[in-house]
Length: 410
Image 1 (cartoon, rainbow, N blue to C red):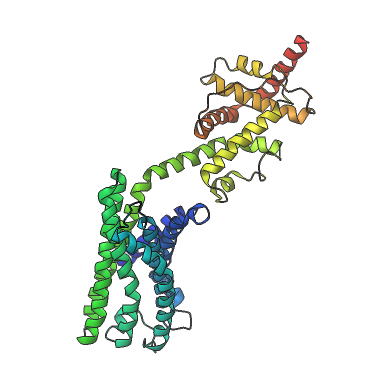
Image 2: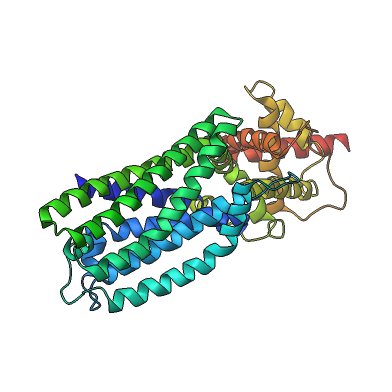
């Protein structure tokens, strides 16, 4: 059961890191630091799983997996510390509060302290830790060794400081949060940090107690297993606490993704017909929906602009009477306005393949009272849905109908 819990925790933290990955390219400094914390802890948690430990056991350097776990954890704690320090190290008050001043100092010192810590861990690992025999469990097998206790004390110094600072700042911020979701999320994250503080103190106490009063392996294992479950629970609480305030953003992102999926057929056909319209050649549906070159909201804005630009180009191919013919054909439809525009686009694209562009443009599409990109995208989703239902035969019929009507007018 413990192994399954480890895998679950690693998967959850990794999923959050993947979700927040766009912050690496498009976020501000403290959001990148937050992503770095999740990524670092995700790597460390995976290195604790039996599968990864089995792979690392094949490397000639004895217990290298433990050192890499500690590197990843140290980097993650420094990133988390930087995030909290930069997030809460601001104040508009004339006299800077002490907790803000401390946060600023921590933000300035965290990276230097992290670099020194990593160097010190490396030196201690290869000098004072007894690694003559590869350990099955790094903490249990080395319990009682003085050099190991020194090494682990240095390692747990960073989680101890981070848990204290983050726990204080998140607990304090929870009392002042305006929204209920933010208050609950910050409280859970504060609780998880106090749990982390207890974990760090207990681990330091354990390794030094084992030095002063030798403990049996079974007793050490009991304490270590209990602490591991405690730590996994901590990470799950962090995941829940971090996710609650972003629920609204997650829902909005999902809706945007769904809108992109719905307007893709319309966008693809239009930018393929006019290659210079889009900034890059259109790809397959899954590729377009999954890539992270551009934030999803920016991508939606670009797609709506691409469609508008392509429709403007279509006016030089569409017969003058095409929009009126489309409105006549779709008058009885459930959504006649969107269906009429879909017919116009489909038939105009057909006209692109059958003849050259004209000097004079046809009548523009009907004006719509769009107030923002979301409203325009919602309209285009309706148009795209109707567009996907139009057959080739219907396209040829309405194009011929509009052409005859134009000749009759002449």
